[in-house]
Structures are given as C-alpha cells and as structure tokens.
Length: 195
Image (cartoon, rainbow, N blue to C red):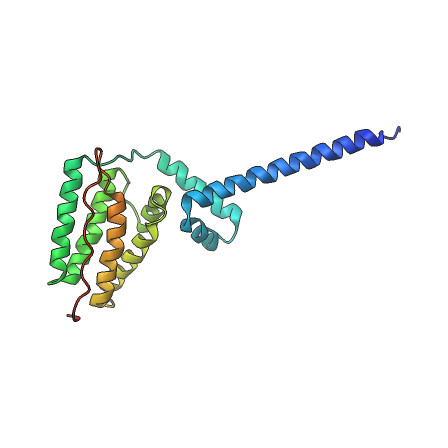
C-alpha cells in the first residue's frame, strides 16, 4: 500500500480544520441570533432545559409554531377600546384589588386573542408570547403567579398592585394598532394602606 504524499495529508487536514471552524462558527452565530432575539428568555430556556442544544431546539420550535399563527396589529378603534377597558380596570383597583387583577388577567388574554395568539394552557401562551415579546413575557409569568396566589388567598394588596404593573408592561407591548400606538395606560398608584 502506497503512503500518501505529506502535502496531500496536510491539505486534507487543513480542509478538515477549515470545515470544523466553519461549522462551529455557524453554530455559534445561530446561538447568538437566538440569544439576541429572545434576550432574557434565552437564559431562562438554558436554565430550564439544562443544555444549550435542548434550549435552542425549544426556542426554534417556538419560532416555528408562532410563524404559523396570524398575529396582527389591532385596528386603532379596537386598541382604543382595550386601552379604555384597562383604565376602567385600574379605577376599580382601589375598591376591589382582587377582582381588578382578575380582570387584568382576562383583559390581557382577550388582547392576546384579538392579536391572533391561540389560547391554551398558560405555559404554552407564555412560550408563544416569548417569540415576539421576549422582554415582557417574564412580566406575564410573574403577574400570573401572583393571580394564582391571590386565588388561594395568599396575595396582599401590594402584591396585587405589582401584578397590575406586570400585566401593564405586557398589555402596553401587545397594544399595537395598525396606524399608531395608543396612549400608554398609566400605572396604578401604590395603595396608602392594605385593605
């Protein structure tokens, strides 16, 4: 058996190294694009799945699933109606914080549905939202957790106020209108005393 020319071996090794470098660069670029797109949600997926490969596969699956939805901006009139309903909910907070927060939860879900997000279990909704609203989806999770505690009688008025603030961040981000953004809803005032 004839031995290979050292020059041919060197070229083959060099070609293999270049191919490996290109592969790792492409994988690294894909990771950076996902991290840029998902922001804090990328880190959350890493923590949840325990490996970059699994986390990134989950994030790509989310993007693929959401790409099949028909997410649309609201007509300006619809956006104004939602903004008005938000103001009414906030005004009720002073007299009935628990019901107002439940209303905020329902209002956010109705807004998501109006934009084209399918309604399902909470974790799926949050994952779907993370594709286009990665910077505010954690607000949604936190608010939902407070509402869940409230339903068990474990959330005080200050926690309920924080839930409204968290819902407001998501609500404002979702409140896109075709022709312009609607005026930003105000945050509820900190209660003077717990009721």
